Image 1 (cartoon, rainbow, N blue to C red):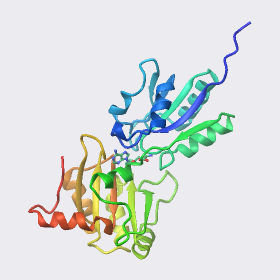
Image 2 (image 1 turned 45 degrees about the vertical axis):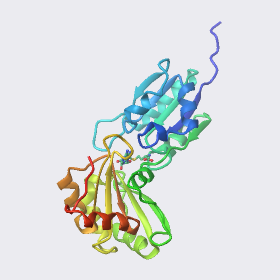
Image 3 (image 1 turned 90 degrees about the horizontal axis):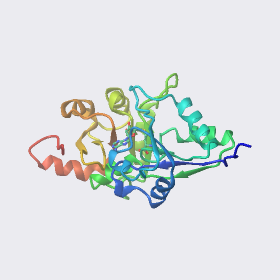
Image 4 (image 1 turned 120 degrees about the horizontal axis):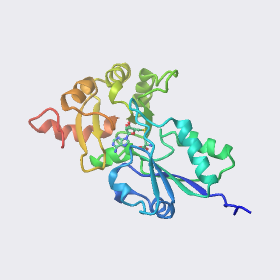
Length: 261
Ligand code: SAH
């Protein structure tokens, strides 16, 4: 008789923005117990060092515009692995439940009768502003924060930027735009319909990683700044008055754009 293998386990784990010191202890524990780790391409190489040598690593990139493993394949593969008795970790950049399709994966796994553990990670929008020494909220400048995608799903209308701008302006909300680099001109034009042209903006690429770079500018020169500085994906576009102190500092310097390589 064939030995019956018991069901494995599955965890959707946030790898955080890149700095391994920002991994949670829970994420680290999951990695240490994993037998298979499916790795998103936004997971920084420094994080991979924490995957035990005994675990199999499978790269399953999902980067916008690049060749990537189809989502349905990833989900089916995870289900198969769990049925084979593996301790599966799906390691995702940032937080698995912030704009990372974690919800879709959770639903597929649950529909297959698999219990899933979800482990939060620090989302890149948080790390981007913290890395500049800027709070997401501040009683004088912003009473809330909005995490939003700049890249609509195919066939779905993306955010209505003029409405988003009005909300952020009227309600004093910090805007953190993910996946916005390739749509920066469109986003800028839309936001200018509800926010003043001089609203401070920061673009942070590779937040928390050794190659982090950023630029500080204003809304009316967002796209121009991205191009001039060669900033691109993965980056966070942060918009709002919480950045006021940072732009004031930058205005005191000789260059209109302060970019840290
Ligand atoms: N779940 C992720 C977001 C995935 S969507 C999170 O919580 O961070 C992918 C987008 O996240 C990228 O296009 C970029 O906008 C942003 N991103 C991910 N890692 C980043 C990093 N280290 N620095 C800046 N932006 C990052």
